[in-house]
Image 1 (cartoon, rainbow, N blue to C red):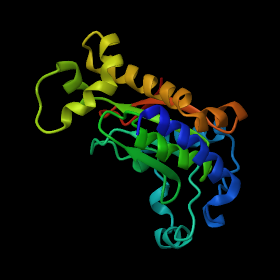
Image 2 (image 1 turned 135 degrees about the vertical axis):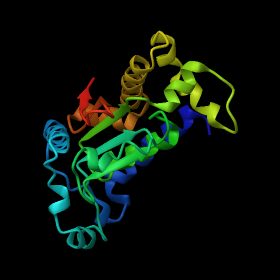
Image 3 (image 1 turned 90 degrees about the horizontal axis):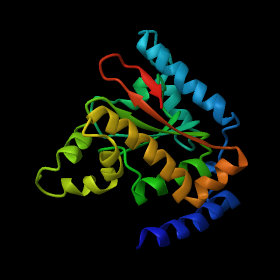
Image 4 (image 1 turned 45 degrees about the vertical axis):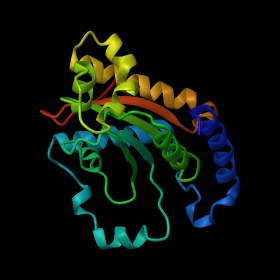
Length: 218
């Protein structure tokens, strides 16, 4: 299906979700504001950097039991698939708190957009962060433009706008890409755009430094 057609269908589906066509146990329960949700992410990352995490002290058995029938994540993160970016750990969050989508280069594919629409429209996530990171292999490959095996080169096209603006600087390009993908989410998806308009959702871009563990808002 063409991207435009998919998004149009997605908008209708999002309205259906919000109208209760999904079982009630999936209904959004989050009541905090987008700013409060972002503050929780920032505070969690500060605990992670300070080696003062609290999520591991929580009763995991209870968390598992409490999330069998429902989930109430307050935030969503579009992250790179890189194994060095453990999203829940980076933000010091336990089971059921974050709705995480991951793909190399943290690009907003149609499948990623659909997933984040579900997270926001059904589960009630209040903030979406597109999280770039230091040393991103997908960005380096796209900047280099070299031949690669299999379907890896399919990642190049969504990164080209950032590559064109980044001056062949990997980290600058990674940060630009996070902002471009965040803007794409807020403009290409009618579902997310409507939630932003209502003030129930914010979309931001961030950058994770592998060497310090710090997430910086862009």
